[in-house]
Length: 148
Image (cartoon, rainbow, N blue to C red):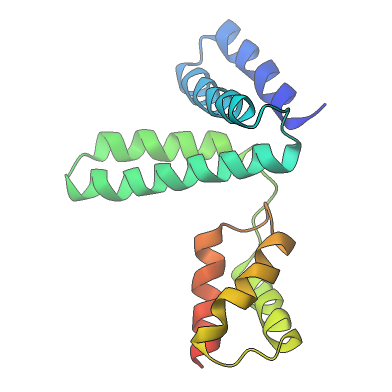
């Protein structure tokens, strides 16, 4: 069963169980997937669905920051709960140590040495880590390694 089918099946289960959090979260991500499929005029594979889910998680993390600035702990908690639901469908994220090792390997492969080489490193590294680590985290690690 592909990831999109699993999400749709779990949405039906959430509807039957009257689980509002799962129902709301799964509807949101399924709508985002369908909109992307309409835009691309093709069915998305699991990798693309995972990327959409990563994007949704990132937007929830940004919402948490904004909610905390506004002292709205209720909104921050709601966003955190949605993140928990979405993360259950994604493969376990790479540890920072593994991410640093992968980045160091690519840096060594292309002999990158300055922050100006960051684009070259990211171009090679991001496809290798697709779905395993968020892009902003990869960017942060690469930047740190190139500044040393």
